[in-house]
Amino acid sequence: MSTTLDLHSHSDASEDSRAPVEAYLNWIKLRRAELPLDGIVLTEHRQFNREADYRPLEDKFGVMVLRASEVETNYGHMLVFGVNDDILARFDFANIRLDAQTLIDEVAKMGGLVVPCHPGRPNIGLCEHYETQPPLGNVVAVEVLNGGSRKGEDERSIELVRRYGYRAVGGSDSHLVSLIGLCATRFDADIRSIDGLVAQLRSGEYQPVDFRPRRKPVPHAVAVETR
Image 1 (cartoon, rainbow, N blue to C red):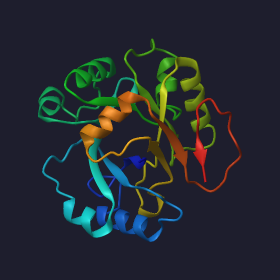
Image 2 (cartoon, rainbow, N blue to C red):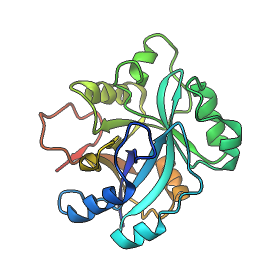
Image 3 (cartoon, one colour):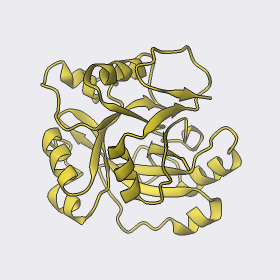
């Protein structure tokens, strides 16, 4: 049984988003044919709400809600999956100058996983930082499909994967209800928890999927599905 998740989304808990979680889930439920998502991951900017309980909404709409975070580092923005008390005690997610290599290495030791997001984006993406700094170690995967990408950004991300052999994921980076699920990741396993998601991200048994309106094809450095 496979699982399709939007790994990158922002609710109204993020300062630049106007999307309530309930509205996201309702949108997905009403558009199952175009958006065959099993769940979303809330990656709020520079924070992690450990107290949030979305189980009533999951039951109401039949869509899983997992929690992660998007943080800022000296190599750009990164998604932190598997956030736990040890990680929160070690890192101040509000710090916009986190050291990327330290974050990647220590989060992994504490049971989580760090995924650089929108690497092709100017200023805040990994590609630009690789032009002036050495490549990072222990990177498992990067986000090659991002629903908010401008022309050429996803192509830069795909070239990064081709060059360094990273695995590839997709996420909408949604800040508006109508943008949820435009890009996602399809896993070969049945995922039911954030720990299960982290395990599957390490496994490599997944691929990015693109639910955006059909665009001009890009070079297939990774297996990217479109609809």
